[in-house]
Structures are given as C-alpha cells and as structure tokens.
Image (cartoon, rainbow, N blue to C red; front, side, top):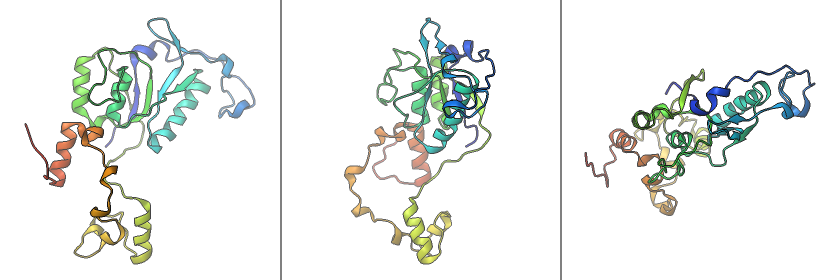
Length: 241
C-alpha cells in the first residue's frame, strides 16, 4: 500500500510550523546529531489557539518501522526546528485508531465509544500512518470534522504492503531441515510440502489467548468483510447487509 505519510493537525501546528532559529556551533553536546543543533534551553513549545503552551507531541505507533522513522522526525523537530517534544503515552493499535487520537477524541482507543463528542488535541504528528487502508473511516470523519481533520503530509518515499506474517522460528526450522523457504506462499501447498510439520496444530492452541473481533481492527465491517471474501472462512459469519 503506497502513500505512507506523516499526519499533521493543521489547526494546532500550522501557525508555528516554521519557527525562525539561529545556527549554533555547539560541538555536538548532549549527543545531538547536528552540529547546528538548537540547544535545549532555546527550544520552544507550540501555542494552541486557546493560548496554551504545549510541547510538540508525537503519537508513536508500536510497529518497528514507525518507531525508527519517528525518531528521525523527532531529531529534526528538536535540533533543526527548535521544538520541545513529548511522546504520547499510549501507542495506537492501528492507524484507524490513530485518526481518532489525532482528532482529540477523549477515549480514542475504545472501539465502542471513541469519545469524539468531547475533543481536545493532545497529539500533533504521527509518522508512518497506514490510514489509507481505511478510506471509508477517513471519508466519514472528514465529513463530520472538516476543520479538524488531520492532514496527510504526503508520501515518506517508500512503499509498504500488508499481508500475512509468520514467526521466524518455524521459518528457520523449515529452511534448516528441508531447505524449503516458507516465506514464499506457494511453498505452503500441502500437495508438495508439509508446512504443518513446523507449526502448532489448532487443538493445541489455547483459545483463552484469542481476542474478539471487536477488540481488533476486525471490528470494522469493511475490514472484516474483506477478510471473509478473501479467506472464504464462513463459519459463524452472519452477513446483515
């Protein structure tokens, strides 16, 4: 999925997005990356439309690539643009959750009640958002909150894809035992190979570890239907519309 980008909330950060600053030859103190890094004591906060002074707060996702790319943005925000920054204390479970968070919904992590009737912007940027995978949610929220919708700042320069993921241990075991690379999906064909030798069987799985669909991104009807359409897994499925 292309179009991985940075989400900015214009209502808060646009007025102060490009502060003026001077270059400092500070000899890379305190582990800074740039020799022109702005010293900490000269960095500034954002000012909200209500006049509140707040640090530039980053919504940090839990996946590794987002954490790496976010670190780059954090360095630029502090050392080059001269902002004080803070990291959100609750990572979103998905990019769809992040949209509600960026909107300032009070209980954005609660799938049954996002709390968007009472909003306060506490996060100003998220790096590597996969929100383009939820166009129906984006369209709905954009219609409801036209002036407050987070802004897609564009592509980060590399494409990304989503798909099935396998643990490293069975892949390594299969490769070392038979030489078959199970990273390639056609090697899952049980007519020619026995991938089941390297994975636990269903009766051995502790169902207490399962999550309800309502506790995952599968709570979303469009996402759930896409899984149903691709997998053909119709057990227990009731289509209501």
